Image (cartoon, rainbow, N blue to C red; front, top):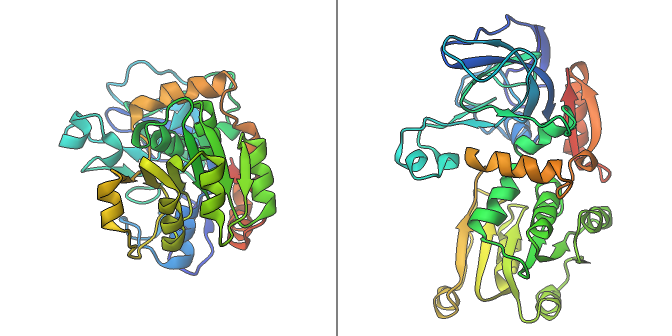
Amino acid sequence: MKAALFYGPQQPLRIEDVNVPSPGRGEVLVKVRACGVCHTDLHYIDHGVPTFKTPPIILGHEVSGTIESLGEGVRGFGQGDRVLVPPVFTCGACEMCRTGRENICANMIMLGNHVHGAYAEYVVAPAKDVIPLPPEIDIEKGSVISDAVSTPFHALLNRGRVRPGDKVAVFGCGGLGLNAVQVAKALGAFVIGVDVIPKKLEFAKNFGADEVLTPSEDIAKKIRKLSGGGVHVAVDAVGNPSIMQTAFSVLRTGGKLLIMGYSDQNVTFNAGRIMFRELEIAGTLGCPPYLYPRLLELVRMGKIKVDELVTHSFPLERINDAFALLRAGEESLIRAIVTM
């Protein structure tokens, strides 16, 4: 099969012929239809973030496709079934898995990190982790649900506990941020989108933002005025410490800051304010498997947009062009996919 292999930082991915993997007991072989192009992969390629599996490794973790074959003992799936493959496989036995927090499984296995991923014609996955994809959802564009949509869904629903009528501010309206906007709106919130790029703010409006703002010296004042004294939930979808501090500053009493963006830097918050106003700061990672059916139903019903998220599509042979577009920060890009 054709696959795009990662050999190390600062190198383009190489399209090569490799053996088709065989599903083991409890596994399925998925014929990949599409795989989302994610900033996580760019961290490996451009920034030297190491993969757990020593290169060469096939990257890619945002997958949709059809069942090609079944490993021993697999029940409930048949050849040709449409499926979504989550980015992380769980052990089901650790404390986190047994308490419903599989997204932070102690023994998690991530596609394109611990094992070969899905920038390839086929990928193997545990049958227990793959999710049937409703026929109403486009099988190629639906690949982005796996990570880009599911991560904000868990963040807003579980970690932010957003309820109808809440006020939510989303800082950063890129791929994850736009989905935070539309998930918050689907949950019944009043949503404020914040970004430095006018095109991203236009996208945010199209995805349900009630108000959009460009960062300024008085942005905290503007948000507090728009939200009647501060937001219930502020979301950092950038991973910048100064933005996290700004997001923290717009919380109302009893509010919560969600850290969805990644940063390896320290950030400082006023402890007295946290204590006196009972503020919360919560990290959020991925999505537990039990939430996917609910999310897919919202997509199927049209409550959450997916087709509009995919603005660019590339064949596997042009995967490096896809990353060049992501790297350049192309304003028209929301999410790109690689198709097989």
